[in-house]
Image (tube, rainbow, N blue to C red; front, side, top):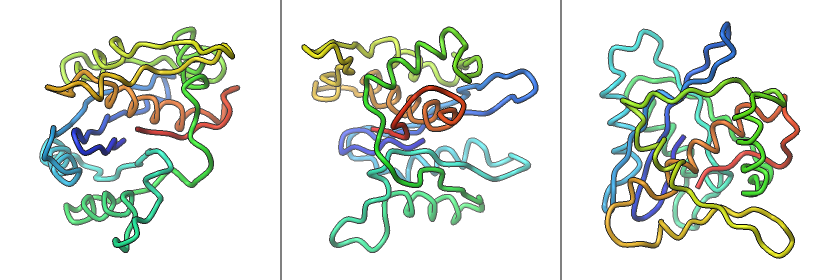
Length: 193
């Protein structure tokens, strides 16, 4: 779900279709430089204001569980309170542990593409989550001397719009890897940017 950064805050929205063994990335919301994560939550709540069941499961990287020295709540708790103030119930899904390496995420997506290792078919709503799809397509990878794969995050450091940088692809990584790791061979997962 949420990716929080000084230049870009976003969330990717997914929905499980259990009978068909499909996970759908159905939407994304974001604010660019100067925006805060509560604005992203408000965009979500405005868009889904007519939902019959107002409940969200939030997947985020483990840094969302870290308290800052002067703040009493974690970033995840702040997001949860934002949702609750808008009438939603929330389950925080990230319970600690290590974030997945980019190497593990890369191989997890290879399993997703081949629909193996316990991963369902993934579908992306191109009308509502086009930015997520393009962020994923533009996310380059490199291999280090130890043959480990790393996501090239240099797009986050470039000036201009961050919409197609790796923020949304990182959020999608987090949902898919965290949501489906139990049935897979993927180790050390549960991250977001």
